[in-house]
Image 1 (cartoon, one colour):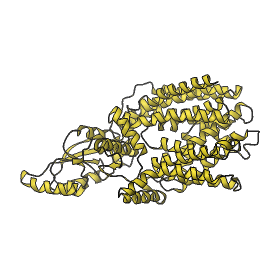
Image 2 (spheres, rainbow, N blue to C red):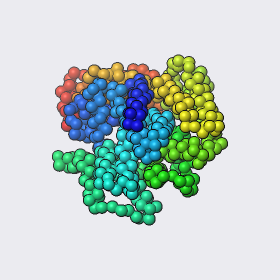
Image 3 (cartoon, one colour):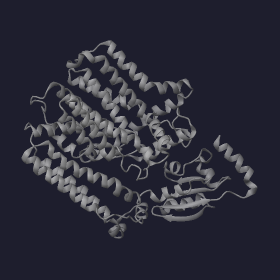
Image 4 (cartoon, one colour):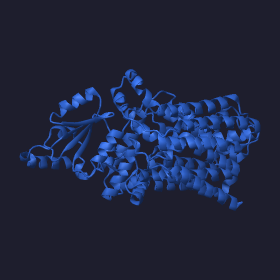
Length: 566
């Protein structure tokens, strides 16, 4: 038995390395979050200051350092590049699948563990997140493990290990805090409170277990904050807390959305697991003889799903990854439902097939539409009101030609699965569905995303890369970005971001201005920087340079620059 488990573990590792690591360096980082975190890691490596998280060589108080440390270590190994920035999440993908397999195996059996891990791996958004450079894959796993070990603490069959489970729960929630902030504990606390309500406030606990939980929580989650306070950086803690509160009260960074934003994202983004999970939402879902341990985890997963959904529906900032913790309960509930269908406890209904085939058809059509975009963009452009979008459409993509067939294969694999699973109800039918989803996802990552990037940020990023090694300032005008930091490999001597001084002051080196190709913004820049020289425009952006004043002003420029740095 142990030998079989070891073989499965090795297969998961090989699978994860093949699908999660392949191609992570082939696509440039996207603003905001990917470049934000990668830049903090780059500056950590450059300055040697591993204690303070920085952006543009100034304290960055929005995020704790754990994930930044991982990226910085990766950059030490692989250099400062996209591969290094995304490598920690690729490794986390492998770890996550191993964790889900072993938890599923211990909760029910190896088949259930494999199905749970498999559904997580082939569902679209979870797959893409493991190939990204954002914090959330690590953050979500830590919260999940914190909730899981606490569910084990409440399990009557595991009383002998209660202190261990309490300590592990506190440890992982603490690591979640160290990764992204106190929202990790908030999610755990709300989940525990709701579970407690459904359990009629019955909880058999010992105070020494509470102590073990709090000790590990404080050590893992609070040590860095205490160190900040001890070294005279308490203002960073205040700014950090203020930022967390602002996320709940405002549409931060312009990220608003409609009320059911996260419901729609999860339903159609975590396919196919989400469609199976819908069968778990029926009343009295556990009435058909589910064993106690599986039923216990089922309740915790259901509670955590609804807690996170409701919490981030209330939060006014709407960003896709805010609800990404839900990938864990959704894939668990999906595996639970699919297992029930294979055992005859649940029915594989017509609407399952309609959702699966319809969503696959939609994704296949979108991929085909992208490959044909260049042929029809001239007809589309007159109907687009956004001048920036119209300018971006001037880019030209280069497709290989086989991409539409991948969409057809995705649809075919889904139809084949629906027919076969209806007739035989065998879980091995998921192999073909998995193959179709993985082929589509890899094609999207390796072929589609690089082409789509050409219509968004490519011309600006190319310009930044050309400035590497040049002693100059680079300043986006009227839009916020982190790309100019990372892709120019900005040095501390070039960190000035004072737009007024850069546009009219006695600068000591050339300053390049990047402005979106919007007529109003371009005219505004010409007025704000009257001596700026136009360089060129390219798919979405215009580029200008302001040369340093005459030699007679050099001394004044040096004094002014020194004041800016100070």
